[in-house]
Length: 239
Image 1 (cartoon, one colour):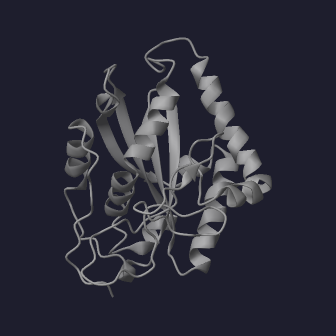
Image 2: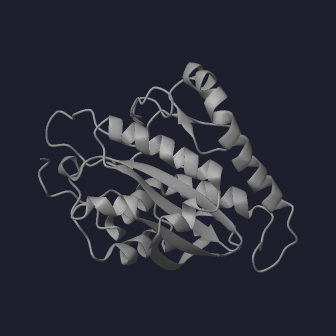
């Protein structure tokens, strides 16, 4: 899985309100403040995040199944013979690092692709598929380029893996209990390797991002130029 956060940082003009920010602790729901403390990733799946060792320990009984499932998939992929679908034995590790590095950009792209500001109900029906091409570059920031982006039925992601679908449902229920609209699903795919990124989304009235029709071009620019400083443009006042 990947960072469960949607309303990423935009520079406040007044005292910041508590909102979904960079990442959310999967146990207590605390919002990460990277300037004070960065959350830790689970060492097994390297995707779920926690604010403290205590939260990580208490979450293990419910996280164990999806964690071991994800780790096994990554390990299995690493054992595949090199081919067009598996061009590098470290591709699973590189893809996880790519997803973590560009988490805010990928979440923003999904929000724009599904037009959630205008049509929040799309979150229950569709997902964003991002296809990557692999480049064997020595610098990690230049190992992937955007091959294509597609809005696909959400079932394209959830119907093939019951454990992943159950984890998305769990996040969706938590998000709606706290007033959000649900879980945005982004699927990042390169060759025969893929990673699901579920993102809990606040109500559109709480999200200040501008709607952008050029989101695919913005995504391509930041990924292929190796930039990691993406921040959504916000000129709309929060409702």
